Image (tube, rainbow, N blue to C red; front, top):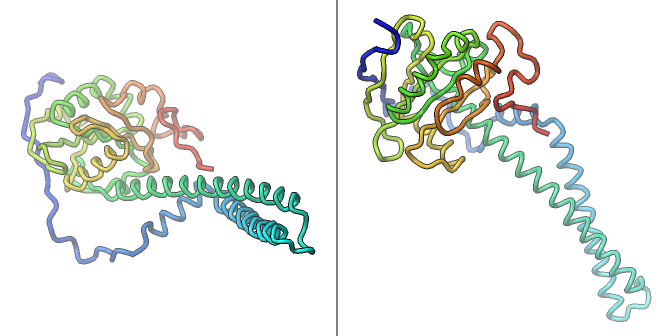
Length: 287
């Protein structure tokens, strides 16, 4: 049968069971795991030292501000041994400015650390999601690290079909670059609902190696919904998420994935792409 003229078949989805395996690790009261914290430290090795310096300077300035304020008050009340009032007022201005300045720097670093750890935590949850390969083997995205550049296309059936058709036009270059397409069909009007949908079936074995099927789609949808809320994307919009081989999010957006850009800029899977590893949404080291 000619490629691109395949019929439509019913996409079978697996719904997560309500009972989780008994071997699931117990939830911790901590917001982020130790792995998340270690990855955050590795990606921003100087942030902790900076925050310590900024915090120390801000505390020192606050202490100086309290002392200068006390001296100004005692001088205003007529204490003979207190420093001159103009000197105390000058010290108050300097200490107040220093406390505000270093406090602002500390606050910005703390906010950036929170955003970074939230991003890393989302990537960890994404790596735990499972998909079924053409061989029938079910693997997590973590298992695909170092082998595949996963691209998730999430939307209604028309969006998924359009994304697959666009990818087929540059399938061979994408296969050379280890791209694995995972179409996620979202259905229903409520958040997190999944329906069976009609999408085009793979034409041949090569197509099947090019695509995988999401398993436990309610978890996939919950993750996608979280990304949409974070990016303020309207419900019903088709989105894509492209991953690096190390599992970090490389690029994401609304609409059909930029397959031609991926095919041109990503290095072949069997070659080292250098520090940038392509230029589509480069992931750098946070400072």
